[in-house]
Image 1 (cartoon, rainbow, N blue to C red):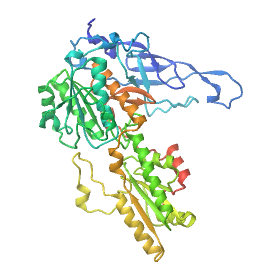
Image 2: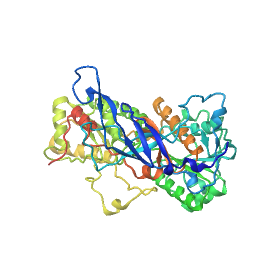
Image 3: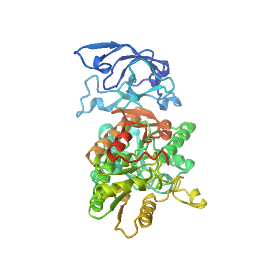
Length: 509
């Protein structure tokens, strides 16, 4: 049953891999960490107008894909042993088919859109990641597992679902009985006693907003945290948080490696703004968009019910305007969407005031959606305000909604003195953060939690789990901690926003 874990190290293997690609599934030869695509088939309509039903063979060569190597406990603990996954004997699973367990040759391409003219850009490498899911051999003996779960940073719909599913998955799938919640973020490792968790305790947590084990910003003290992990004999650490939290998780992972501790660390990315890179989306985002639409609908009703009425809605999005963008596209009531990635200005030709003046004359009302990080470069602030940071070290943003509300009123008083004018300002930030996750996000949180469990039980460490092109993958934590996901103002999504709102591009004064 037991065997040396070294056979799992990919550096010395040649494997045949299957790329998980919706419309393109060629066989792939894997040599060390390089993948080479062989000829495959595609419908002729992919290149030419459909004339007849036939397949055309296309040669895609040369296309080199680099497989991102995943850290494993055996990297620094070479004598670890493996054992058969207990799912093999789970009466509820019957994992008898060949596709149940994931092999090391199952990988997922990050890029799935290709130019079949044969012209491939050489500047950006094509990357692949290991597919998430249960492995037939695991490194941890479930009876010896002592797991810690911590939530850090701001609230986000779905936090309690992730915690619940980690507890239930560890308990029911693998038979783990020592599971603890770390209270109030990173500082909870060294400032208080953890909470013992079990399925009965967390049974209804997914129906509650926020995080029952509490969260906080800051409090990161690397030595104290790792000392606590070592002293309390935690050997699996599940860290749920955004980019700042994940940067801290990378430091914890590196310190654990330096001390050569038999402790695996996994990150579950959490940011309602959806600004974590590489993965398709972060949990809570779709719930946030759904709730944002309610605020936009209310603003639209208010604006429509007043002469020269403007409904102004501020949505979350410090560095990425994904919530504002998706809410704008799905509501169809927004006249102008302002996001951090696209600078705007107020006065002059092509400015916001000129556009709103036109809309008010045309329709009698307008709705403006602004992401919290938009316009920070044009809001007046003193030197002291420029230096302020929060407990996580992020720059403190000024309230663009309050500022824009004030500027709109000053503009109207200056240009249309004596005429009726109403601005209804809505900031639903804390309402959105605190709600329970919708059905889509609840499902997503469950799959994230179970993917994390399967990976960590197999001995992987220093990784993040998340979907890439719809397939769940294991990604080196360091890569995700530094990756961003800005709105591409040159791509089709932003073009759709412009076409729906007909707003100015703010590119010239």
